Length: 146
Image (tube, helix red, strand yellow):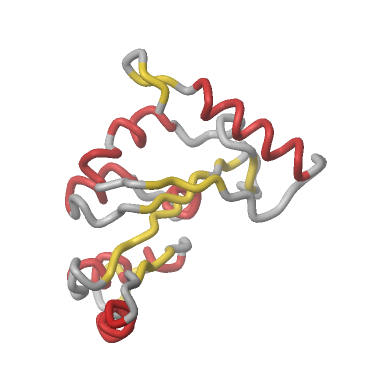
């Protein structure tokens, strides 16, 4: 990742790594994702934290913010339904508690977040986008829209 970051920097770009749940697997006592965070140069490699996959791995986004402040300038915001399958769902319609996550945005270093909907179940894509948009447009913390 550092080598990719060096190459990206040559072209005025920044390397960013997007997680899934399997990066939170443990190998020889080490969480793979944490290994990447601890062994990459913050000037070369950023992390695009996907909160759905963090939740699916039964991890805590804010614990990551606290342990690795400033490393997550990009977020993927998508929700998880309340089923055994834990399928993707529209933001605000699922089980992820967005309030503490957005409260940690400064510590995380978040500059941009992107709503992502990998797949749709029983809903038209444009309707799904509208639901996520409407939730985030009205979502407030401390009287401020996020």
